[in-house]
Length: 305
Image (cartoon, rainbow, N blue to C red; front, side):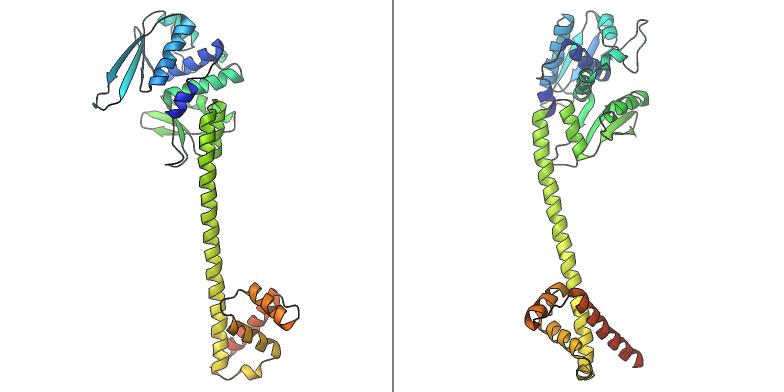
């Protein structure tokens, strides 16, 4: 609702306003003897009223009523009684033979500005977007048939927004799930305040998710270090149990002494400690090689047993 309020305050050329109104009438109007549009948002209702007034020099009738569920929310019904066919032809809703057009004619989306205006009208009339602060990333448009859904999908994907189509009961939903693409769409319809709000929340959530992943990764590394060190200590305990510590070479004795002294250290940390204490270069791979030798001795011992 905030985004719709923002885009209804934009100034546009008459050509752009016709494109915007074309999308609104195509997706929101019921048409018989009159053009009737039912809208829940007060700002959108005022926008539609001004569009008809400024473009076609007519004064629509606005009726305000409570919704049927008796909630405090209001419905705004905009009724256009004059110049119906002229307006519908101009907006490319019907052709010269008064047949309804599923897809608007080329002049409605003839250039970049007209396409942006049409997408604004589309969002105003049948679009919705989740608040990134409270829900997952999701932007959708609910339209009435597959041909029009593909038309909208093509418009969006001309901007590489990776939109997709899914059947939803009797209608079709064109939707975008990627957070960056949703932000790009807001830029396209010139909802710049919404872009800043959306980007702030998106960056915060991405940073939080990254922190959680790093914490999980760090915890996994700690678990791995503990598991490896514990296995090495068990192998050392087996050598000690069978009084074999005096029978192994000095390098293995060194690593056993330091592993016993620093049971919670990683191999990298243990290599640094030994290098400083023994005043010689000892690498992580070198220590790993020594522990493999100890493991081989223990394995042979257990096989003999």
